[in-house]
Image (cartoon, rainbow, N blue to C red; front, top):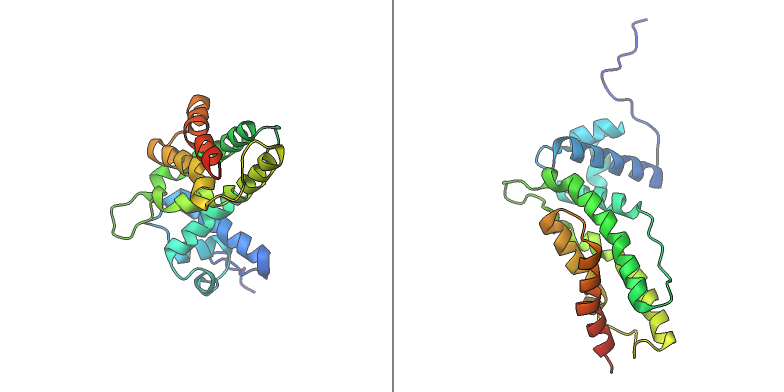
Length: 201
C-alpha cells in the first residue's frame, strides 16, 4: 500500500457553528498573511480543510467573506456593559473598551486591506461593523441614566446613540492608532453628552 498523500487537505466533518467558526478563522489568518487582494477562496478552503463550495454558499463574494471574518474577530473581544454609576463614566468606559479593540484590529488590517484595485476593501468599509456592537450597550447605559434622572429621555435616534463611536471609529481608521484618554473625554464631553442631554429637554 502506498503511503497516504498529505499534499491535499483532508475534509473534516464539521457542521453548523463549528464549521462556520473554522471557515472564518481560516479567512482571518489568510487575510493577515496575504492581504485582501491576494485572498482566494481556494486558499481559505485549504486552510479550513474544506471545499470552495462550502465558502461560496455562505459568503458569495470575497468582500462578504472578509467582512464576516473581521466581524468574528471583533465579536470575540470581551465587551461587558460598564456600570460606573454615571452616564459620563459609563460612556467613557465603553469607549475605552471599543478603542482598544478597534485599534488592535485596525493596526492588524491596515496594510492588508487598502489596495489600488477597483472594488477593493478598505478599513473605511468596516466602519459599520466596528460600531454596530456598541448600540446595545449604549441603549442599556441610556436607560440607566434616564432612571437616575441624568437625561430627559433614552428614546434617541440611532445616529445620536452611536455618534461617539462613529467619531472614535473615524479617528482609529484615519490615524491607525488608539485614541488617547483626553481625546475620548473630548468626544464625550463636547459632542455626546450635549446631544443626549439636549434631546427632549
